[in-house]
Image (cartoon, rainbow, N blue to C red; front, side, top):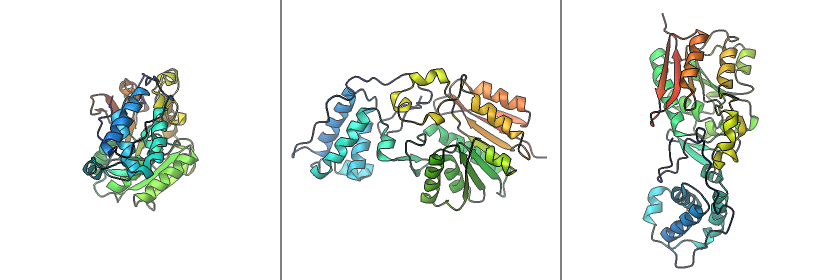
Length: 326
């Protein structure tokens, strides 16, 4: 799993997490208000202690990230002003942020933002928080896709786009590609559309609202590249997820059915209704699911090369299938 490193506040790979964060002290007390003489550094340390006592695992990075946001500073400016007095006019807003984090709400929902592939993304409780391992899926799709279509032009479909992290990043990285995306949640599509606009590719991504490939089947769209990070948590494991995920992230983006593979099967079934199977397909999946998903692709019979890609922690995280062009 990816654990928060205390520097950029990244969340752990919580969709694989079977442990729940401790709730010791959660919801009790309140962060100690800084006195006039307290520095930004001292206020940050107090907040870290408060969050630790409330059972927040990444208490230090959470306190720092929230304080940067409350003060409107990037990390370098934040460290340069480490010894300055805490601005009292920002205290109330910061206190409310800390109390939300103490209850388990993810930092990204409190600040409303998360970086992905070096790009800024707005996040709300309507969408799953973009995570580091998904950057590797985008990297693989872009690398293989450029080799398969050296002159550009493939049509990409991201199924279950959420915040739009995948399609927006692909559109930024590959200006010559035709990018589309869909999600069953209209609220998620709204967030993704706003992120596309904010990153300068709003006019280059076509969004649909619907169930998986429903819109592509209906409109007889030929998909060249299909990419998806669908829900993959086994239903029985939902109750054991960290509270940050279980209580705050959208269940639509988490529950993958009894064995976690429901949506992979449904996508592969719907592919049969398209004009032709995608020449390149890439899935993200949960720990221990790679072999089963690779077998589903093999049984589907469309792809000549099926490979499993590990993430930075050595976990088999993605399955990629491709067709050899004659």
